[in-house]
Length: 350
Image (tube, rainbow, N blue to C red; front, side):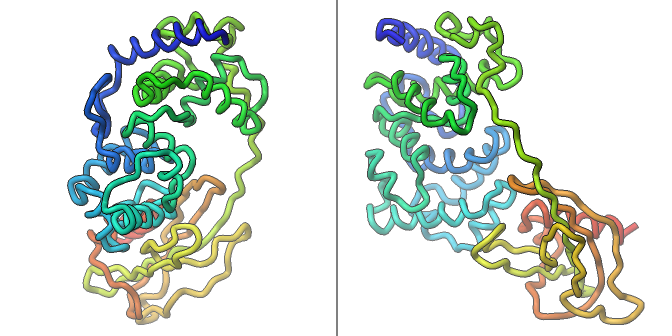
């Protein structure tokens, strides 16, 4: 795209952003001279990596109320942080969040470094997050490319290479649009355009401020971009979740290993999750034959790389567990285990 067109495109999109920018709790208004606290930008970007703005916003507000600075977060107990993260997915990100906060508190005096390279050196901070914090918090000219930006760029340049193979090309093309002027606003303008106008299935081209520059729109089929590689079928696994109660309203929980899926989180005792139906022994024997393990149905859950069906079995008994009141267990458990617990409670309190 010629430099003159890029200048006009940038002016059109930034003008649209000035008038239509979303109001978000981690964002400064367009053109603001005071930038958003880097801690809030970093925290929001980590949360938004695997979820949506409406879902992440209440988590962000609870986190910043409880841990208002990065040093406060650095001092949090691992278990408190993991419990607060429940429902945001990819729990390895929560562990990385804590590791990064502690590195900023320990090595940088509680102040985030202000360059993309220094941010990238922090634990758990990848190329996208480093660029986003550099641009949005420090107004550095950085190439910030998330899924929304990839879609905008793929349509703008009518990129025929399918994703994910196209990602290096999309990042290069996005970089041609970055300038020293208002880099933080530019990054967020592209994100807002992708979120509200250049939608995945129904792009609102008549409302788009840069439609005149868009090769995808000129093709007559902008929704065709980005071109997608056909998805492989998602594997399906099966397992058993055991809901053990002690007669006092408490639920038996366990701490999962630090490494692996849902690492470091509390959970229900489960079998292995395998393709074939598992033939697994319960974690303990029920107290009395009359209280033997009873199957009460199953729950389904979808992770990024596989789907899961957990058969739910309940009993009353004792053992070496993290005995937790029912309400606390509901609040602390990741979604898949909360589904299993709620299934068990619904079926045994009828």
